[in-house]
Image (tube, rainbow, N blue to C red):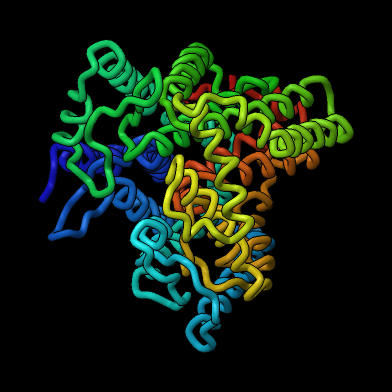
Length: 490
């Protein structure tokens, strides 16, 4: 079964593949389309066969991987030796983790791709033994496609190409944000779920998707074209990260996007506030730390200032948790925000005492499963600390917890090295202290999301890493500004 969205995406991909002039234009346009779809279009399905649904982003990623492989072969792309060695080391580490899981199964128990923490908690199903499951193959393919795409991107694209990609991403996301404003109007003004009805008609009614209007406190849940409010808040936070990095750069990557940037920041902040996602509080804190780090760079390079910002942020977090019991007693449990904060205090006590899976009542079950699954999955690293239990063998409402337990310390280090620390003459890192701090903010952002491993194998994270690197490059290179429409220096 297919939808209207299926034909629209097929038409766009065909235009890119057969209408682009030159291989580089084709590659950049396909990359931009993949970023837009991954970030903004989660709802619905490209095709459904029985109970199996293939997401729109999956189709884009498969096409992007094929384009990347074709580019490497046809263009004889020259790859830096260190990038290849880092990739080979990572693949060896991943294979060790998967092989050990098959040959020497561990005694670890938790949630898997076939049995989630939600089912374990709500239906009181026993924790599952961590084994190599057939469902892991899809995640493994996703990771391998991502590694192929990122290797091609860092070897093939230059700074002016990234300006072109960023401009195409802006052109794709801006109209989607306009449409998302219609959800705000229909939900908040007319109290109607017509936006969801039309979305499901065009994109398809996918699994695990909220389909009706939901009130929370004095507001209503906003989901855009995602499946739930927290996913929408995550996507909006990524857009704000991209725009804030560009805003604080002495010279933005694409000058023509300035007026759009102000509009997007205002719209994104408004949507994040109105989305009624409890995650937006945490994401907002991550954005605040990001702003402080970038603002410190504007005042001149200083590792001491960067260290102060991170220390200040860590102190605020510790102070919050120290005062959480008192704060919870002062909150009104009848309101949405008050109940959620009181719930966090309750869940932390239950989780640290090991009773969270057995308690029969909860102020907010979503808080319990998110915090509990993160805590329990991170603990699994103790079973195999070096190479982990095998990437994608565990699941949690935390991307970084899944990465750590799946890859171990060595595997996680190599994975992050391939994501963030690749060698590039076009995008050198001058302020390494700031760059490392931005990475810490990104890792913190993935601590309490519900996106599985997506923040570590989707193409939008490559674009975000490029922007991080540009923000930390030298002023002489930042002084070069490119026309985002053509990629030419202006």
